Picture 1 (cartoon, rainbow, N blue to C red):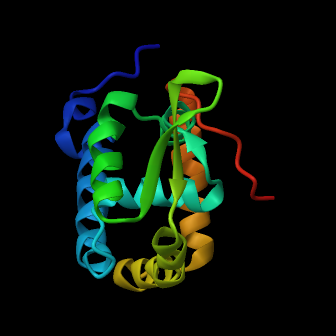
Picture 2 (tube, rainbow, N blue to C red):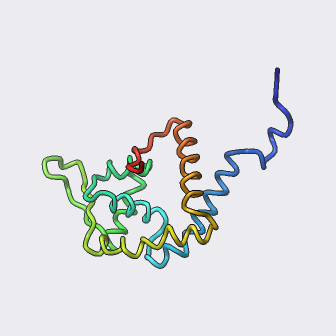
Length: 154
């Protein structure tokens, strides 16, 4: 039985459209919150990875964020200019670059603790709703064959 209908091609029914608009909208909602930390959204993601583990190699950060290393380089340079990270060669592996938080980068974490709470308030979501949405998005990510690192969350 063929279940296709003309309604299947309505823009409002396209998962890709809803995800694209939601992504842009949510990242846009982060902008004023992150401006207080002097970070862009991609820089914030890098800092989140480093607050979980520092130092990390560029390759490790790239895998954690499912982002190309070439995309990370300018962000890391900017974070270094801001005094939040240092970059240095990994001893014994001159091709690998280690990124480590500075004291200022570690201290910024305290201010960043307000970001998730502020975003839940801005979006009108509870912590449980955020977890449900995250689980659904991770399911979609897995379905596309993209691998994300395992969560340490139980």
